[in-house]
Length: 203
Image 1 (tube, one colour):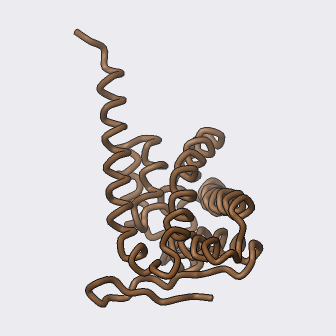
Image 2: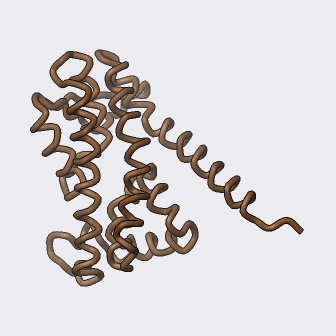
Image 3: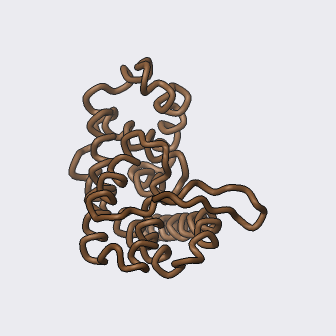
């Protein structure tokens, strides 16, 4: 069941989707990656609320969450690999994969390389275009899968945990998810910069 939440300023956050079963949770997670107009965060946080209420169990929820998120991402990759930029003019998908959005994703790739696959998971609105473009550019499948799985291992448990901790106060957490996402993105960028600095040959 969805639950509307608001931040401290009174503006509405995306509805939370609190699943009633493990099967419903899995379907919702996969659907968010394939066109469902609900943010993935809303489903994962909602599942955390269900964990707090005892509706869902931790082990299957975490496993299904990881598999569901990866399945949605791999479908986007497969769409890009199979059809590439031909989908830009598709009547149903043109709004999601616009030429401008794909061009922006290309610049993102040019700047961050494979790191764009990780960063896109924590940048609202970037994931679909980046993962679609990964397939379109024929990025090696196993490399894409490994990098995306690493990002999922960070995001999925974190959002489930935040939702379970919040319980009845999940509106406060939902209002701060954007801030937490930016903070985590900053940490990832710092780690990446440090790794590049260490790899540079010393003069």
